[in-house]
Amino acid sequence: MSEPYMTVLASPIGPIGMVIAGETLEILDFIDGEGRFDDLVARQYPQGVRRSASDPSGIADRIDAYLGGQLDAIENIPTRPSGTNFQQSVWQSLRTIPCGATISYAELAKRVGSPRASRAVGQANGRNPIAIVHPCHRVIGADGTLTGYGGGLGRKEWLLRHEGSLDVS
Image 1 (spheres, rainbow, N blue to C red):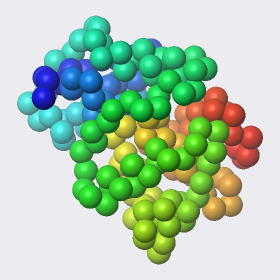
Image 2: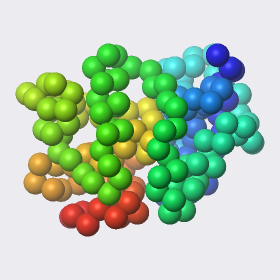
Image 3: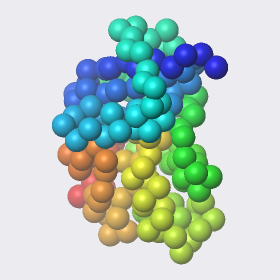
């Protein structure tokens, strides 16, 4: 495995930090005063990662293209999130939600084979280390309201509008 590096992308919804190893995205989150990105990096890489102004993998360019309107640019980006088996199943299931669609936490729980575990699914969703590409923003409340998003509800709403979700409350 290649040495991981961190790169930062300016975006319409704030700076986005990414950790990439080789051709694989391992962390993607917003860099803001909350420190969530730094916490994700410290948990997975206690020794730290080098910062790079360039991204030879091209992943940052694909994220930028998505944010610029090429919505399919993030499909098939190789990812390797760090988490439990249950979290992994939730995060992989997120990738099956089509762009422009939303589902409820209850529906996500059914999809991962745990129909009574909406709360656990919500917690796993909230710990998603690869925002946007593992589209946790596409999961909303059963009544159609926007609920919980590690990057903030304003970003969640922006992403859903960007993707053409018309049922955003």
